[in-house]
Length: 548
Image 1 (cartoon, rainbow, N blue to C red):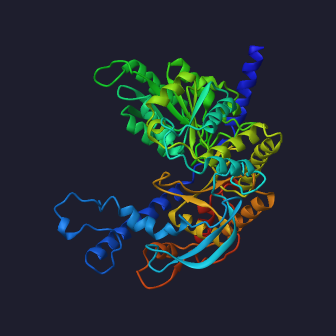
Image 2: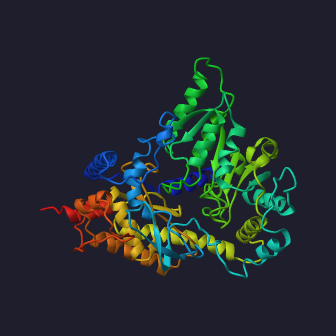
Image 3: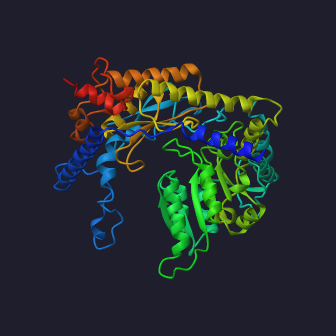
């Protein structure tokens, strides 16, 4: 029986991990991307020179003349990227939403008269924009009165705020109910909830490790994990993303060599990974990491912010996806801000771990307790997923998300786009590469009433700028087809010349209205690329520089 179970586990693992792609761009795309950033940087220095001599108006914050001998508050070189690159394209971010951020939402149109240094609202609303950017994986960010009845009742009973820490007089019965529910849902002994997801990582990691400890962190870990590791005072070493050879090499070296200079054994070795990586859409190789953790007597910290509720047959995250025992993970962390349509996070594991954090975690001791309506929203969503509300709505949403994810990924691959990640991941990055293409894609998709998130350096590698689609169970097939159609149509009909890219970044500061639109020249279908797979950049580049 054990042999059969082992064989089945190996087959499940191979089935999941083999459907994960990270296709590399051809060399000329990388060269043109570096060239684009080089041109942007050169023009940035030119613009800084023009500002310094007074030929161009300077909008950035500057030191007062009276404080010229003080330590500077604004490091000029550090703000170079913000002044000369981000500011030119920041209309693609922080767009004001004026409706429920469900599968569709409404945006307040804004324009800039000074090339994105300031914005003003036009008074016009862009209605029914398809939302492909929110982490609303199971569609629980909703305003259905029937579903939210218990949330309304708890709000009337408890109010909207606690105004105290749980250590003082902010510990409510529904907080304890939620903690027990989370532990039962994940399959561990105990859990503890926090009011902020980011702080769940950044404020709890320093309570678990400190000086004399070693943290082995995946190179693509979230900023909250990185900040928590830095605040802890522990030694940090970074291993290559999902690379077990790199991780084992570091573990072996840590065991053999010990701490620097003294060579004393490390007090603790903590491996930090994520379940689903939010920028890559990849899934952690959990069985292999657990095997290494046991082999070298290390501890494992698993961040399931994007995986809890979103992956696994019943939404219980990557432990269920790989069919591993949750007890093999020492610290299980997750957030309620995504699949549960709420706010906050949790730490789960053995009872001793949770009780230790209750008295040693800064977030537990000093932070305000979770808001009662938020707590009830999480309880409502989790009971729905578990089927404790007497319906099958939760499992229906989980299955719908899985169906939408596989369908959306499959269609993009058929169209020839390079996408990253695992087939089970609802995070779908589509590679754009060149900075000008990132700007063009986001603006043009908005004109077609599709809201997307675009990401570039320094959030990604300089040659791997991308658009990131986030799937939801609330998306209908018609919505997904519309996104596919508009993405395919835009990338096959848009020409973006090098001159237009420079105009977007470096046009003079004239009193010309600049709105969230990009004027593109239509063209015919692009020639086919290598083996039928092309990125957006390759498609657009093929249009600009067609082969003879």
